[in-house]
Length: 113
Length: 109
Image (cartoon, rainbow over all chains, first blue to last red; front, side):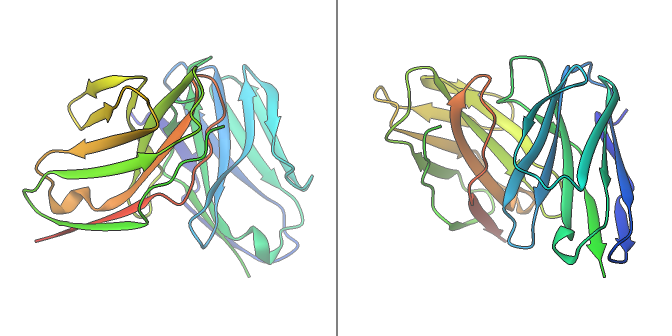
């Protein structure tokens, strides 16, 4: 009965590879997000979707492409991985119009070697 | 979005009440104050949100003075498991949230 789930929990890959992280929420929320938390623990928003429509793109390199097949899922695909992409990626969701109250997933620790 | 200032770290002991204060001098009329908690290796967790005076839930209380230029998160009778980073955020109810550095709370036995 996990509210926001992500897979995989850990991801180790080499530079240049392409990888995807999946996110699903069963809260019935209309808005979903991706965040990146780097080694210094700063948590930064990357993308936000409302009902499958992109509404926030925080100047993230276009190697990162979010995809929302339906409002319960927001996947993150990363092309040509770089060392600097190593971080923990969190998915979150909220009710429409309630971005202040978000529910986060457990995170995916991505390590690029 | 209003800028917030909170202590970088705090220590307390089990069983004590812990108060973490956040300053937000340029808070706007329609801004809310929200607190999140993040345990190591986990995503942030929404704790509480308020606009003015006092809000209480099963986890914490939030005290907001009349001028709203600061707020205090109060955690009653903390335990070791309350060791976490606590983030204070200020913004409109539907503004994107921007996390600062937070306050690293360390509970000692």
